[in-house]
Image 1 (spheres, rainbow, N blue to C red):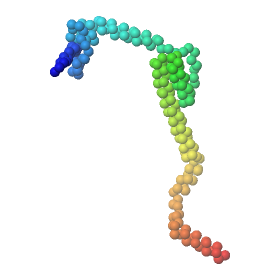
Image 2 (cartoon, one colour; image 1 turned 135 degrees about the vertical axis):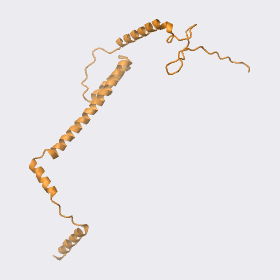
Image 3 (cartoon, rainbow, N blue to C red; image 1 turned 90 degrees about the horizontal axis):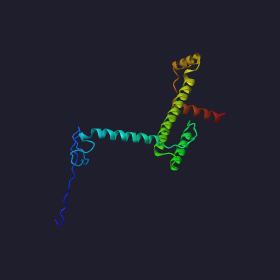
Image 4 (tube, one colour; image 1 turned 120 degrees about the vertical axis):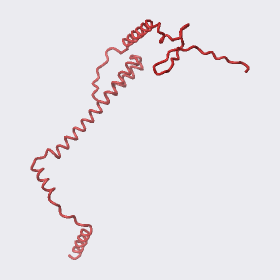
Length: 177
């Protein structure tokens, strides 16, 4: 070997999880654990989690929305499409942040699904009403008459040979007379 490369392995955290996998984080100087797994750092870990949570909660207060946004009816898919178009344009002009745009988008998708379900239920209800009107809602005497007709055995249908013979007879009578 000309230039022997010496691989220097960095010491890794000695923590082993419940499932047996080892932490791959770098250790703290002079300690066998990383900051997150060092048993001597419990108070500092708790303080870091608290500060991280507080910082993140303040981010939620910083959601930007333009003042005086109009209230939209959102009763049809077209209304929702207008809302989404407006949201996209507000985001592109940087008048709202990404989190607000995502929230509006998610709610719009839910609203579109609800509108679709409502339209489907309305179709089913109107189809059921038409079915009721044509079959069940007729007067009882008409229902009984229809039942009587269905119990009477119908006359046997004429065969194709009989109908052909009948048409030939009528044609020949037309020629004679």
